[in-house]
Amino acid sequence: MVVRFLRDETTEAAAEDASTLNELPAPPRQLLDRHGARVLDPATAVVAAGQPAPRTTVYRPGVFLIPQRYLRDQQTLAAINGVLARIGLYAEPAGRDPKEAARYRQLDELPVRALLRVREDADPVVVDCWKALQLLRSAASGERPELDPKIVREMSVEHLLFTTPVFGGVPWETSGLGGTPWETSGFGAGSSYGRTHGANRIPVTLAAAPPYRSEKPAHRRPVIAVLDTGIGPHPWFGLADRSGPPPAGSGLAVAPDIQAAILQAELASGTTLPTQLLADYWDAPTTGQPLIGDVDTDTGHGLFIAGIVRQACPEADTLAVRVVHSDGVAYEADVLLALHLLADRVRNAQANNRPQDMVDIVSISMGYYVEDPADVAFTGQFGSAIAELLGLGVLVTAAAGNDATTRRFYPAAFADQPLGGGSGPQVISVGALNPDVTASKALFSNEGPWVRAWATGAGVVSTYPTDVRGTAAADHEVPGFGRNSFDPDDYSAGFAVWDGTSFAAPLAAAELGKALLQSGDLATVDRETVVKRAWTALGTL
Image (cartoon, rainbow, N blue to C red; front, side, top):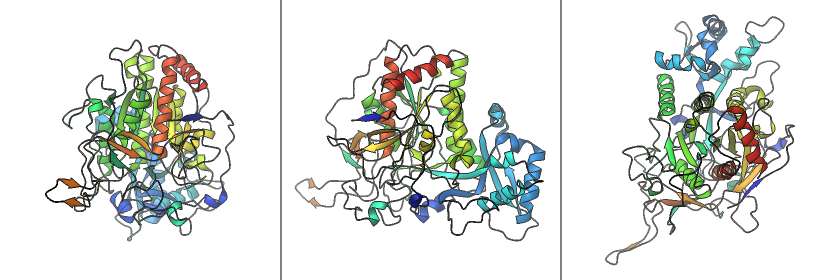
């Protein structure tokens, strides 16, 4: 496998191709309904005076995000609700357990969900946070604004983020429910990337032992946090079933405290908003449609990534944090919470000299297309969460997306928009290469000056949960002779082949892990040393 880090350190934001600014294939309606989401249509969206027309994006209309310190301030909340009353709505904090609320008081900047509700004295109204935010932005403008413009600038819709396996179900499938550049341009199902119905992965066997990993390393292992779909059983990680967490020393670990916080936040908002709950770190259910039984498009995605890390940097540990549902959808608030809590973990490890709690690299294989032409203006919450990690010296890799477009895909597109000052290296955005001898760029990969690294992301073989079965079966059987054709939904062999920038990003993260091992003793974890070590590691690649 190949990894290329580009040396262009230009910090000026690069322009996009104007013809791609509104390209966003429509997610399947059933996917939107499952997660209580809708597509923002630039042709029909209301816009506040003086604001530019939005671009397409996917968001949850019943909730918006705002730093929690504002929601705790009754005067601020009352001012917001005074404006929202004009359209028959009011906002309230998503209910949270008092102990949990106290836990997060040290994370005042954490964007949390504010639920939109209909006032009892109002006529029937459409609950739409986009319309509500436009009203709030109008109220924060002019010579005598009703609301503090700074507060309103920090409010945003809650985007749906999507993982990025090409053809892989989210949000643009080859099933005919969505449209992709290759479907409309003749590549479609006949493309060399399109292997099976529904998703482009297929089960394979691998006649090789797990990559060697020392039992007692001389130094602390680098830790790569993977925010994805979670984990499943596999012998490479000592997981025979789903009865308990990965054993110590297996190279795979989980974060029950972060998972519990994510579940609590989802439970708090799920009372009024269609919400699929992430109960724990297990990648489940196998299918989101039990009566049909097809394996969900992103089932196994997180374990596949853990296997890439194990192959490319076996001495590293993968910390799996489940923020993505098995259909490839993540809620922005969940991802932001996970990022803030990882930063909190690193900050405490550095302050209290606890190297065993360190996280060195975060790998993100999901993203979204922002609606605001100014980009960073209303993606500041995501930028702040990542800047926190960068400021602590944590390296961050992010998949560039699989829509063959130059349109900025966040958080990868932060790569050329510097976050924070005096920190470690900026976000490393990763596009996908083909597995050919020239390592050509994959047809599906997004690209542009904001893509700062390239790694093999097509034809990748890695670990897959051994207990996954779907309803698809061998299409030909010879009774009495014990012969069948290939079963595309039986993953009991424990491996699959898959394509996407989703798999290029963790490969780049693993390469950084190897560089960290060569850059010095990882036991020293004070912030200054960690930041310097991150720069040294990146400089060797």
